Length: 217
Ligand code: GRF
Image (cartoon, rainbow, N blue to C red; front, top):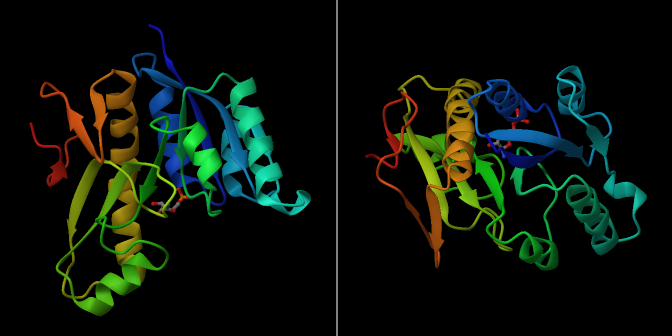
């Protein structure tokens, strides 16, 4: 099987990276992680990659004089590894329009809210503060505006009456860990098409067994 070559970009703990590593460990999974890039040397995700025998590279933004040179270094690393799809997984630096343009429709992100609600940080606390009844998570193609771009997959997560920020973070992560590998699989199988600001998914898709995940066949 010809596998889609992934580059995963992280800044921290890397539990979503781990979910992708675990999925890629199956010989039937249609993607393979070629390189993991962190902008922070202490990111735990770098150890996760190394433990799995995956090339792990730190490209520390502090070592570069400006954003374009930092992003050029990332671009070069991804290109050197012949990456076909970039997966942002808790990468905490804003990426410039040039870099995003170079990877248009070849770079995706996972965000812990039902976009377009709650872009940015502290999504769980803000949702609880507003008293919404559903939180969620989203996988989307990356566009230059933060947490914006064609939506590939979403999960709606019921908020319990006694929910705390901590419990909601943990609950959301469980959905993220199932959704991110599922979304990458769809792309790798050629079942995702971007049309304008929307994504069309082929109808015969196999979805992970969690309620409330869209697209629904
Ligand atoms: C996740 O909640 C993801 O949605 C957001 O950043 C967090 C990263 O967590 N973009 P981890 O590093 O994958 O554990």
